[in-house]
Image 1 (cartoon, helix red, strand yellow):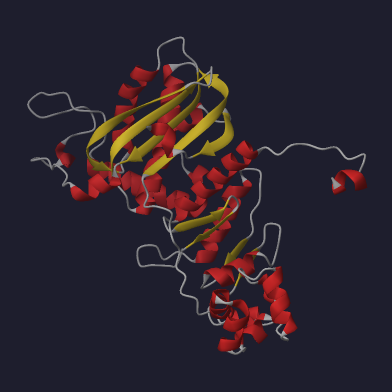
Image 2 (tube, helix red, strand yellow; image 1 turned 135 degrees about the vertical axis):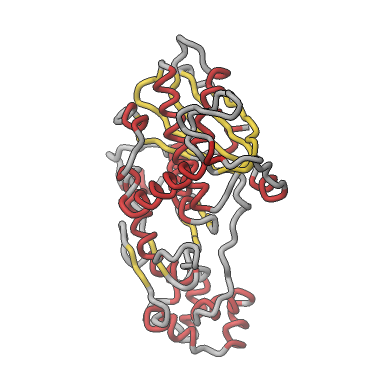
Length: 362
């Protein structure tokens, strides 16, 4: 009411919370591409652990830059702070907006934090700020040097947390909401798809993205799901068990062709196509059924054993080499650095809306 009184000629518009949630899901999906150690704390804020490991030695700053580039492709920007603790990373993310990237190197935390006002620290609101300032504590450096008993007396339990954060000794690890239950990718198209060839090209493009994400996370699933949205906005999906836990999009391709026939008939038009892989817990518990014969003996030209017609899928070792090579190229030069021919079939036809929503694949 105050705003209307002060600005009588202003133009007012309602919020679009569905759109906000949609964009939030897309951003979180980008973060999950980098690590399963993700803790979302609000619609537009999250913590993630990208500490280099032997399996993934990439520098956190390189990951942060890639995230910013991918988020910018959605038409929005994000600011990122890189630090050794959540409190430091949060402070750093607020230092340079919009689209800022602030890095607090290990060992420099004290110099970075000391001059900042106590209000900048997560968990210190206006009331706590007034209490601290009334006792002569205005900066985080002063808070770090304060008497523990006094601060805890003034602020209660929150005082202990504030002291640990100000001293950069908090033991507050990334708490993921849940273990990964689904890896998926879906895309809406500017023009409805109406031919089987175009729909399969879209599905296989999504499957390639899912396969790459699975390999990046070190996951293999037992169930493949295929989702479509028709021109009337109704949604259908089907699921099929895989013969063994897999992250191989070439195996997904043939199953998607069969699943499509259950979802689509000539004359139907589709507006969205999505692919998901689930069943990771089962994959960890159940052993895979191995072949008595070396898969490499199955030639890619359709030859088989005892005259049986074999699939057109390349031998497993060839597929694995191809997937590893394309993964490395895309990791270094971006998603568009190398593409399969099917991806060019629909180039420019998508709306740019890519999202992840496992619930829709049930």
